[in-house]
Length: 302
Image 1 (cartoon, rainbow, N blue to C red):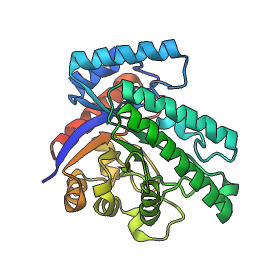
Image 2 (cartoon, rainbow, N blue to C red):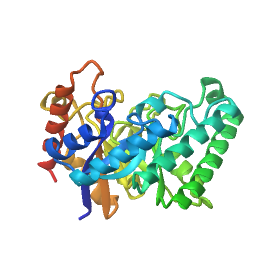
Image 3 (cartoon, helix red, strand yellow):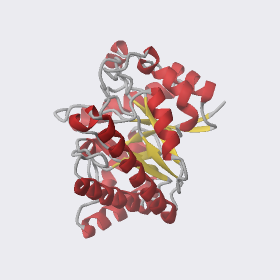
């Protein structure tokens, strides 16, 4: 049986519990987990250097105090709204590469073993033009190789590529993911791995039944995914619900089925990170309570 390490992304803390001492303490003492994926919503790597230096130092100090490990860094919700490495403009793609490079350096300073996330989004025009689409994808893969060289120099172990639920944000189907992952790993200076998300199974343009089944994704691609994002969802859209009693009644994600799928084709060790995103209008204490309940629910199965 594989080893499953339950942790949280710290996206729940964005805008609310932004002080490292605060979110690390809550993670360790209330949520009762000691492993985190650090979302760049809580620290922009492009920010003014002294401020970044201060926040990194405080984060590392808090993690040491509470025995918390930051396993990886991830692009997060804010960066997801940008086109990043697939922007129509070459200058904007180069800026995204610089931004991503800063994220890699930040990840290394936090002691992470990997960095990754969303690589970008095609414009509707580029997505609709096969030649232009291929050009942008090829350029994105060149940037991933460049980041891989930097990551190797910094001591990172792999790059995390996240399949998305939107056709303009490749890869968004099982077969497209296999193809793009194979291309990304050809002569790659740093291995490219997946970060599967159990809620990213709602591609509206896919007519393939398997693409809408989270357990098929895990069974077929789990061996390539050392990190898995957990969210409760109804499968219709990318919900990012908590695993609370309310949402579990509506949701399709079952911990036992996730584990069973990974057991059929997973790795010896897989990190399971909650990526639950409540409305920003929710009070902070409600967010924390919902995360605590979500962790407790999953621990019953692990």
